[in-house]
Image (cartoon, rainbow, N blue to C red):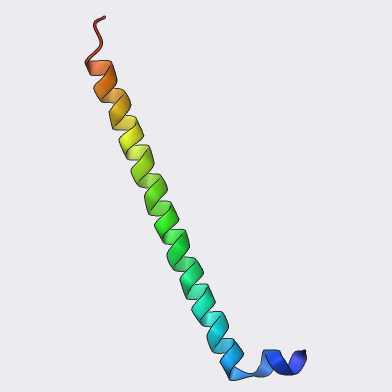
Length: 52
């Protein structure tokens, strides 16, 4: 098993996987940020239209 870790192709694959994981994490972070933004402004819009 140690021989497989020492191969350069395995190292390249791990770099690709790490880059893809980083890309997915960034997309997830942006989606969460966007969701929070719209959730907040939906609440503000809703409150503004209330009759107090």
